[in-house]
Image (cartoon, rainbow over all chains, first blue to last red; front, side, top):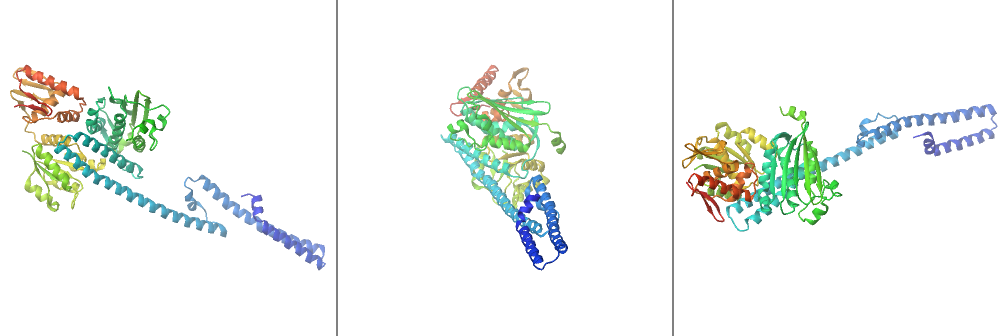
Length: 339
Length: 221
């Protein structure tokens, strides 16, 4: 707010003052009041009004400039109400009271949605755990009553389980609260679990699974890591080329981090699509040619990595290879926490 | 024959689990009444318990703690809740292993066997015919004669040995190998078995491993 804006805003007041002054002058002339008295009355009248306008201007300027400055500096704009000083004019008081009311109703609305989301999340988790029971039963039934179609059925159960895991970790990753537990985890153990999970399909598709130098411990949540490696390997299997396919997993210890590389000689990713593979529901040309692609796998890998404080990188050459690298930092902070 | 108690409230799952365990040569007992499982266990004295976490009336974790106060009976937690916290908690309460649903049945059996073996230390010295088996050295010994097996061959031999006179499928052998971090392919398995067979033949056990076409292998006593 500057003077010009203020005066423009007050044009009606100023107009009335001037019109009144003109009428007063006419009356003074009509009664033939002498010049000294006319000047004195004019002075008192005009100075009085100018004084009123000036005080009001200064008051408002102080308040609104402070208001604007604080609003600009705030990251969460709605917190402005908490930061203002008690104003000394009515409009500002009304403004602050209204803002307070608005904030309050917005907060109520937000917490209502928050609760709804939380309830929904809990229900989905519960639901997933319930669905895993019939999936387990199916696996056992197929195993106990060997039929010719057992392999096909198990393959479909494997897919079903994979999708269930995806939604479970999607829900977990969307949750604001901490849902993981960082401990010292042996990479070999996690890789072994993933390998066993994918054993049948790897053997079926004749993909060699080569693991070396993974006797290293890292700080992570083993279940989350298992899910992430599983997603990466699932892609490697999905996009393998057929003959002489292999997946190679190597861990390397650097000075302040451990790199886990998952390499495959599959169809690779086009250079122009590579920067987008971690985007949600991005499937690229490979995905579009493959109906089973959801575009969620790598997105979730990236998201969970970020939550756990790991880094994830991808390198690829179209028609040659894909390599996903997860980097775990050797953070002393975690080690202190776990002592 | 080891007795295994199944504590699982999903009826269809419990039934199939029972069948799986019985086919594998165990005595399996289902749980009917969840309000006094603890008393049931005391009466039945099983060798191992498969315990679900989500149970009606009582939480699996609470039950685990209660059993642990009184006995060292091996307990494997079986659950569909796969998060790290539950696993760490269960292990700290004294569970011997933790498996998430849906599990691979062959792996479940391997884990059961491993836990039973860990708690039953009577089997220190193991022998096949006149051969003494020394797994950690990868050797089979008869007096002064010694056969050295590779790690893979030893895994295969031990699995066949533990299932003598029973048909062992290629899938079971493969699962055991992969479970021991040996991620070999089909061809390598064939090669390993024929090498093992050759080594056994060299010391006169021609008939040790029989191949059943389309079914698997049998190690004869």
